[in-house]
Image 1 (cartoon, rainbow over the protein chains, first blue to last red):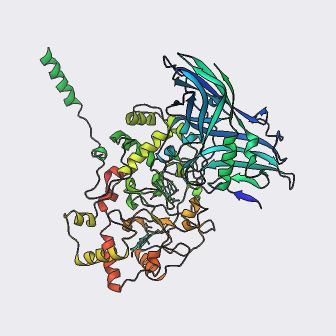
Image 2 (cartoon, rainbow over the protein chains, first blue to last red; image 1 turned 60 degrees about the horizontal axis):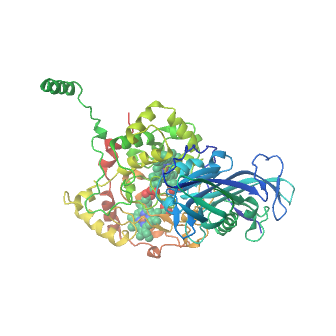
Image 3 (tube, each protein chain N blue to C red; image 1 turned 180 degrees about the vertical axis):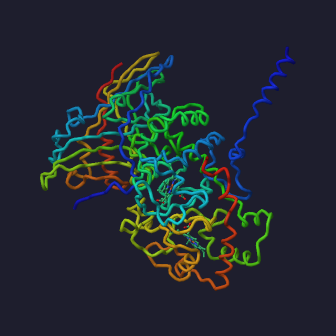
Length: 258
Length: 342
């Protein structure tokens, strides 16, 4: 059965290629540590590249050949877990990661109380509070095109590209827009990632952390995704929910440096 | 020295009397006596004269549309209580025809959701929909912001309103929310009667009684809506796009109990807001009453209150119409604060 959930109706906002304004250097907070977080998006073991729309650079588990033209998501409510259980929550923690905008892939979090941190918690998506409290700005500005205007709510993650349709060999588009901030089909998931090595914060220390997401793991839901069957996802429902779970589980921390 | 200084200052004041724009003289949000508290009360978006002025300018400026041809005010006209006169459904850029009737706009701060299907959850989020809807203004947010930033006049207006000339979508929609939120309609003869400032005729009073027993469960006083989503039994018919509008079903397609439900509209200002219903299918109040008395369809999710339609004797009908007339607020449609600036 072909499952097609059309991106619905007129009000869908168009994508636009605005870049995130550079937030400028983050001022260290005296007596505390700082960590630079870098998001590296991968396809299996290969860094994702958006610049191969002519051919099909990648193959998923079903054997579909595909390429990726857009890859964007929200990370929010970052918390650092110290070995004694204390958690440092970044204030105003909303980050828009857009593979097409290198400046968006990396940001700095100051204010870590001294100590050894062993894990990081992330919300993949935007918490429900910011979906219901009116106009937002910065990372949450609807200008980034990560927003459903006709049925209020953020698009938590977006992947678009082309695939080779195995029925007829034609090039076809696919578009996964994952939204839904409440109820059984919410696509906002909290994940806890252990660190491969302790993050040690001290007086004015600067650490770094590299996090990886994996495009291939999107296609793990519900069983192996066949692009011929699931290629347009643009509304709240079980498919978006399932894709969001596989996507969230694709994250890992690959490197910590102190 | 001191005396000289203050004397000079007095002179300066005399030479430059502060010109008061009468349309901005009274920008203050008041909850009308005995009304419930509003959902939106400007707590995150402090209402100011300057913010209201900017919002009004934006509302009537076609710069928000792709080809600079259509403003919010094109579809929401002040003299029509901010609905669109004589248009069953909206007409956007390139004369593209929409599928729904432009609703009247007033008392929006009491709305818990926006649009006929309640799909938008906040007054500040609402403007993003018409601006980006291809059938309405068909513009991108990035372009709108770039166009506004390129105009010195807007830079100044944003600076006056928000203290900085940096223009963002948030400031734009907050200014629009200040203008729209100020649009309170609470001066109809009904309101004056309720405030003991005026009286209703015997017929109108009888009509109020009819109204309270037959209509008020959904069209609840004093806003004349409970803002819930319901199916009032309109026949399912194809819209301009050749499909049946499933109302709330568009927002929650996986929930069969949401289909064909629409937000209960207010019954204030009906004199100015014809045609009626989500697709403007009924041209007159008589047609609306004919619907409730004789044409309620048993479509899926019909509201239980309308299971047997609504019975109205000829006299009750005439009294009800007299009462509905007392909900027309002429001071609202003529309010100089809400007219297109010259």
